[in-house]
Length: 224
Ligand code: C5P
Image 1 (cartoon, rainbow, N blue to C red):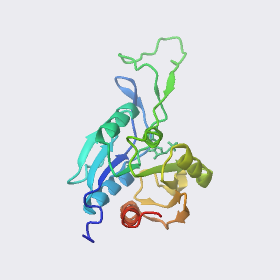
Image 2 (spheres, rainbow, N blue to C red):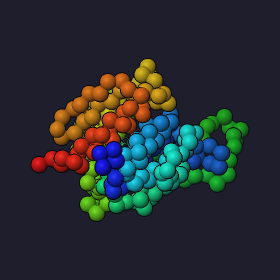
Image 3 (cartoon, rainbow, N blue to C red):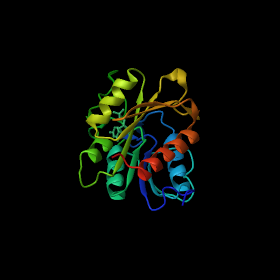
Image 4 (tube, rainbow, N blue to C red):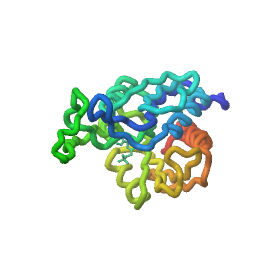
């Protein structure tokens, strides 16, 4: 039906930050609110899709009528995404931490009186989008990533498109002046093999609605 253009489609969406524990009371985090990813999940569900939202720690409520899997770390997010696949569409909107702490301390780290701060040993986290993009069994027909950048937006988005084997990258400039991280508005550019589409500044819910329309159009008239 025209009002439910994604009915029968399964969509997996990641949203929010990840937290990488240092010890039982401390973690590494980022400023992602989950607003954009959650709005996409809501819009996809309203378009009739069967949605699984894999969310990092956020303070916003779970969207209604959607299966939400709550995770903390990048590793757990990857596992939850794998469990949720296969799907027709995956949208990786989470701001996944690039690095985790090599060995989480079992106890709260204490000052040792020497005046020297402890050293944190970091290890690179799995890249969820790239892992799925390069896995022929798991890869959905349409794989969408995000690129939050503070400089060289298009170059970075284009390189992510090929490196992570995504079909589209939703690129946004997250410099502090823009107020995008945590805010309600977003200005995005959609980068694909077809070129670049510039969208005006919109509410995150409007970006979500347009993205869902673009996805519906993709499935209703697949490229030749
Ligand atoms: O490289 P960068 O983190 O900017 O890439 C952004 C895209 O890759 C986003 O779609 C993000 O969700 C995804 N990503 C991921 N796993 C990571 C890092 C990024 O899925 N470890």
